[in-house]
Figure 1 (spheres, rainbow, N blue to C red):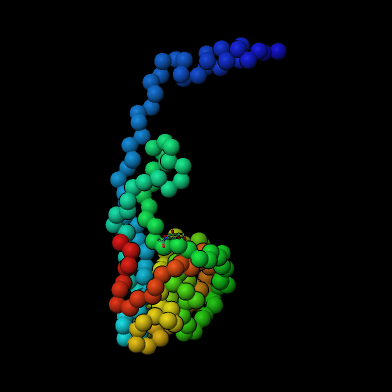
Figure 2: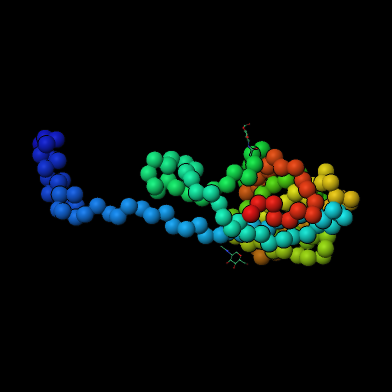
Length: 178
Ligand SMILES: *[C@@H]1O[C@H](CO)[C@@H](O)[C@H](O)[C@H]1NC(C)=O
Ligand SMILES: *[C@@H]1O[C@H](CO)[C@@H](O)[C@H](O)[C@H]1NC(C)=O
């Protein structure tokens, strides 16, 4: 039976630490790479639109952990989330003119869905795409800024994460986070 000391000596014989291999270079935090989201917003006349937005910089800090440099990330607290939901929308579904229940982020996990905005434009969202919308019924625009939506009829459902946030709806203000 190996004593603890024998065990340590044996493992030292095969470990890198005991063979003069230098410690790895300190971790250098790579530069931030911009990422994108789409804003479904209303102009103040009450017509809904989509706008492509870019987060061009985020503050560097530690989001979780953070004792070692590996814990570094780039993050921005937009606002507090109030509700989070996993939602599966069946394939080929159509939802006529409506408002979101609250300002929310919709992130596509799989499948695809689309919105048709009041300006007649259709924007399809695929896996990994993020949409923020604040075209709620209580938006300050002159008319109710509704949109229609549906899932792409490709035989697979669209799985999303919907995250409602505390955010005061605005009009004529595309891309509120940059
Ligand atoms: C963000 O959008 C820009 C402009 O459309 C595009 O060039 C870039 O590749 C996008 N970045 C990512 C991570 O998708
Ligand atoms: C989120 O909620 C906390 C606690 O209620 C509050 O202190 C903080 O200011 C809120 N953050 C934002 C961005 O609204």
